[in-house]
Structure formats: C-alpha cells, structure tokens
Image (cartoon, rainbow, N blue to C red; front, side, top):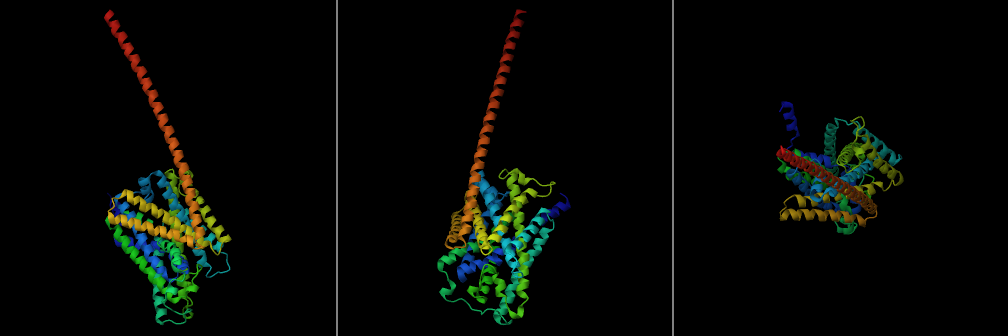
Amino acid sequence: MSKASTTSTEEKKLKWWQLSLLGVAGTIGTGYFLGSSLAISIGGPAVLLVYVFAALGTYVVFDALARMTSDHPEQGSFRSYAKKAFGSWAGFASGWMYWFSELLIMGSQLTALSIFSRFWFPSVPLWIFAAGFGIVGLCIVFFGNKGFDRVENVLAIIKIAAIIMFLVIAIALLAGWIGGTKYEHKVPMDTATIFPKGGIGLWSAFLFAFYAYGGIEVLGIMSYRLQKPEDAPKAGKVMLIALSTVYVVSIGLALIMVPLKAFNPKESPFVLALSSDHLAFVPHLFNGVLIVAGFSTMTASLYAVTSMIITLAQEGDAPKLFSRKWKKKFPLFALSLIGCGLIGTIIMSLLLPGKVYEYITTAAGLMLLYNWSFILLSSGRLLKPGKFDNVKRWTGLLLIVAAVTGTLFHTLSRPGFYISLLLVSLIAISDVILQRIRKKKSTTKTSNSLTEEEDEDEHVAQDLSGYHITGIRLRKKSKLK
C-alpha cells in the first residue's frame, strides 16, 4: 500500500469524541433555531421535559443503528438492514420514507430560511425567498462543489459559535450587566404557567422536540469510520447528552427572558431573547448566523435526497432514469425530481404563508419517525438482543408512537399528519405494485429457464439415443466381418 493511500485511510478513521462533535454540529439546525419556538408556543415551558424524553428516544434509535453498522457494515445502512430483516418490500419502503422525510425537512428548512430573511424584509413574500434559496442549493449540488465538505465544517463551527454567543449574552442580560432589555425577565413557577395548555399541549409539542434531533441516522451511517466501532454507542451517549443539555439550557434561558405570549413560529426564540436597546445589532447578527447555519443543513439534506434517489434507481426501487447523469457528471434527472418537490414547497409558501412552516415541519418530523421505527424493528431481527435491549427498543417505539399521536390534538399539526399518511399510502401502493411486477418477472424467468432445461435434456437424450443405435450397428457390422 502506498504512503498516500495509508494517509487517506488514517484520515477516515475517527475517535469517538470526534464523532460526537460531528453529531452535535450536524444535528443542530432550523429544527432547533426555529422549531423550538413552535414547540414552546404549543406546549409552554414544560417542553423542556419532552426535549429530554426525545433525547432518550433518539439515543435508542442511534444505538440500534450503530450496533447494526458495527456488526454488519452495509452501504445502504438502515435501508439495507430493513431489506435484510423483512425483505425487499421493507428496503423499498424504508428508502422512500427516508427520501420523503429529507425532502420535507429540506422544505421546512427552506421555509425557515425565508422566515429568517423576512426579519429584514418583512414586505417581501415568503415564496420569493424560498425560490431563491432553493435555486442556489440546487446549483451547488448540480455542480458538485468538491470544497463543500470543508465549507460544511466551517458552517458547523459558526453554528456552535452562535449558541455560545447566545448563552454568554443571555447570561449577561439576566445578570443585569447589559440593560435595555425588551421584555421583563421572569422564571415560570406555578403549574398554570408551566403547563399553559395542560398535558395535551405538551403531548402535541413532543414531535417538534424529536424533530430537533433529526439527522441522527446519518451519524449512525458514519459510525463505520470509527477507529473502534464498538465505541459508537458511547459516542451517541455523549453527543445526545451534549445536545439535550444545550437545548434545555438555551430554551430555558429564552423562557425566562421572553413572555410566553411573545413566542411565535415566525421568529426564532433566541432572536427574541436577545432584544435589547443597548444591543440593537445583536439580533441582526444572530439572524444572519441562523441563515448561514440553516442553509448549510438545507444543502446537506439536498445532497442526502440526491444520493438516495440515485441509489434507489440503481437498485431497481426507482425508475432507472434518475440514476443517469448528464455528461456522466451532473445528476440532472435526480435534481429535476427534487426540484419538483421544492416547487411544491414554494407553492405552499405562496398559498399558505402563515401556516406552511407548521404543516411541512409536522409532516417532515412524522416521516422521519416512521423511518426510525423501521430501524428499531430491523434491529430486533438482525441483532441478538438481551432483555435490556428489548426494553430499550420498545421504550423507543412507545416514545415515537407518543410523538406521532400527539399531532392529532393540535389544529396546526393535524394537516401535517394527514400529509404524512398520504405519502405513506403512496409508498405502500407503489411497493405492492413493484413487488407484484418483480414476482411476475421472477415467475416468467423461472418458467423460461425450466423450459430451456427441458429442451436441452430432450436434445441430449436424442443425441445419446442416436449414438447408441449407431454403436449397435457398428458392433453388428464388425461381427459379420
């Protein structure tokens, strides 16, 4: 092996703490920066509880995926495991659920970016910003920017820096070192304030807490790059402890600094919390950081859906057209399909500017959780679980069911639930049709193969018969002589 290839191999190997940092940076996105405002407005200060429960459920999913990756490394990851555990129908369903979840997540991020941009340009329609960010993202993926991985690392640092900046300034505002705050600071103490909409409100907010941890399945895929694959569960634990601590502390500070009535799905709770006459530039600076951070996660989702549709097409679970590349380099056909999905988001932004974020975010979160359920169910078949592993798996599934059913109790979340059901139905119908076509082709192929074998046997029998007769005649002639 050459020195260069040895170096390349070494660069690919990660220590467990490096994987944890990558997970923290890669998971934090608009689900946290804006989705938390939606969770607060639905559930009140008690949402801090569901963020902790969502972290527990997310860890169970990551642990299952990391262990399957460690035991059986597969290029298709969770999709390959679903196929191995339940058959080709499960591979098809898991792949398409992930594709739709990432497409919807991308639409949610696109809408969030548009909302952040309207902080400066409130009169500009939402759909114009959505179209602009969508086109830029498609161009980046189309031309295959080789340096984008490095850019992603820089943007990850910006995201972490933004959170640290928020924590430092928030503490300074609370301590009174900086004056001129817009809102009166007050710690929620009584039950009515902590649970303003009761247990149902908290239940309805559960999904949006899970959504903030979205992207964990990508980290599970990356666990094969660990120096010691058995360290993957430890990396997941540390990462989720760090994430849940950041979420609970930062959202808790925002809840103290901003009255509950001021939270809304159109403004980041952190921008609201930093409002001060003495720091007029800070909300603008933080808003700019949110746009940069949100765009990085949106483009990462765009890469994910492009890669997945190409893989699905190559393996026969999508039309072969989408695996073709224009001039053998540009994924034009795959991006055309994704572009149609983004156009749907832009049309929704035009028709439903006040509710589009809630609808798309709910549907995206639900599709993500459906795929996480596949991961947990697959692990039950492919791994050799002990009693505690079974308890963990069923706990994770129950938390996912709780988050899914909670959407039925909130008027803004319910349409997203119906959208997710529609998509699941379309995937199921397509799956049934595809499996029947495959079965029919397999039966025809087997029948043709058997017919060919029978014909070949008959020809061999005829040849042998002729040879035998000829042999007898030869022997008889020889006797006459």
